[in-house]
Image (cartoon, rainbow, N blue to C red):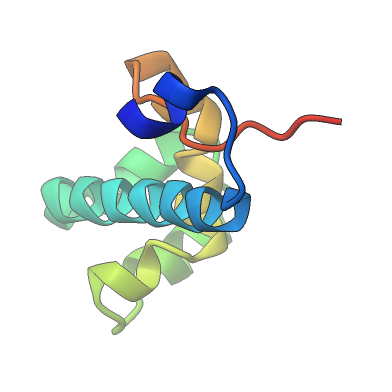
Length: 94
């Protein structure tokens, strides 16, 4: 964020947008790994439906692929990371 914050503008918005989404995906991956066997319960606590939570928790895919799944994305939206204080690299402006 240093270079962008210092100059106050950027010509590479798409790079920052991709990097921002990659960071959130990586954080979702780490959280999914930390949940381990209790992943289904964590998804249900965060409002994911029973069927979607079960299909996500019992999926044979690894944590990286599941970090883009609808269940994990619903349970850990961008607002969740903002509440933790994770800085945004890309803010959509009109």
